[in-house]
Length: 115
Image 1 (cartoon, rainbow, N blue to C red):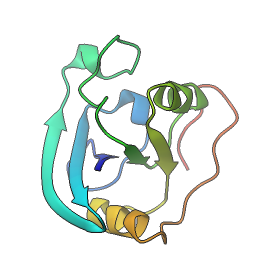
Image 2: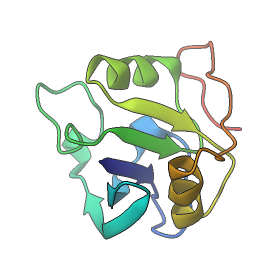
Image 3: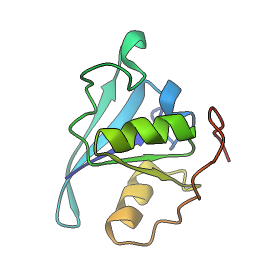
Image 4: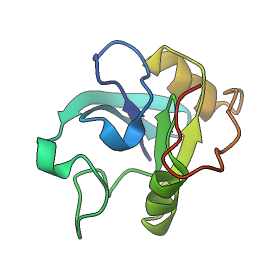
């Protein structure tokens, strides 16, 4: 399984997922992380509207916040979207893997994101 985490500053889980260009990709086997690498998208590829996208092979996207339209685009691509207040990417992934990640409820307003 592959889990992407929005991290525009390469340090923390960031919000504005649809505007983010930097993602930590965690490859997992069962509940263990076996690889972690950073993907930095070109400006033109940051949104999920294109026919193919470098994040299409991830199963889960963890972020600090996202608009409902972006969540919809992810769902259409078979990617589970998770918003959280957890700021550490590694702790967020570990918590998601063991079922203890505190998730924020989905936002109802198109274009709204954040905490």
